[in-house]
Length: 131
Image (cartoon, rainbow, N blue to C red; front, side, top):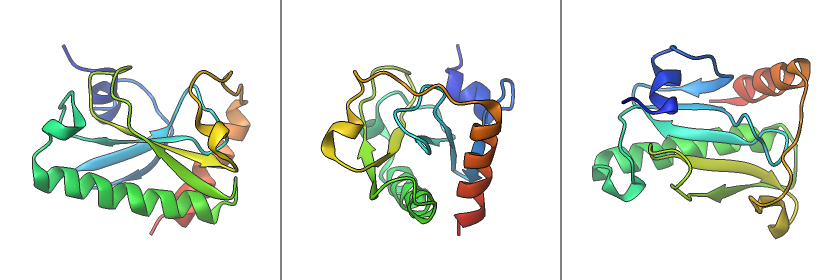
């Protein structure tokens, strides 16, 4: 059965996509820790990030770097933190979370509740800064 991320990649379910390449896609997290919290996912469905072929792992990290720079340009926080947990969805992914301090990337924290308008503005802002 396809993961929820594969369904997003295949456009079977909606997502707020901020960037896409031949091999990767980035979209806003639906349960964000902060404004701009984005997931970066390889289009190939592989459960564990360290099971990715080296070339795809490299592509994913380079793509995540470009997305992080786009998030940084939005000035949501001091910088963009990175987390790779790999337990919540059986599809490798990277969390890019705008943070001002180390505790801003604690996944036990309450998640933000943002309006559609806020999410749309965040999406447009990140996309506009993606190079």
